[in-house]
Image (cartoon, rainbow, N blue to C red):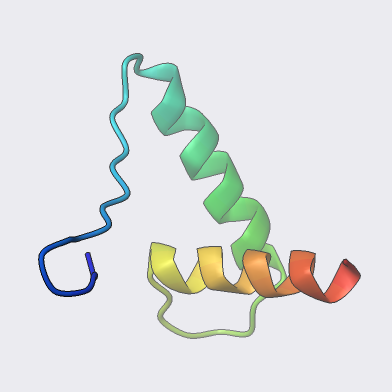
Length: 57
């Protein structure tokens, strides 16, 4: 969450079906396969994916 005086920007994610958790786990496993050994958060994996996508643009 961030913003300027008198305003904020929020990005909210709501899951409406349990299937979403399976796709998230599959995404994490796919991304982890390309990482060196270590501890990674889901944020780390998302940033890695976003940087990869931006580099291709």
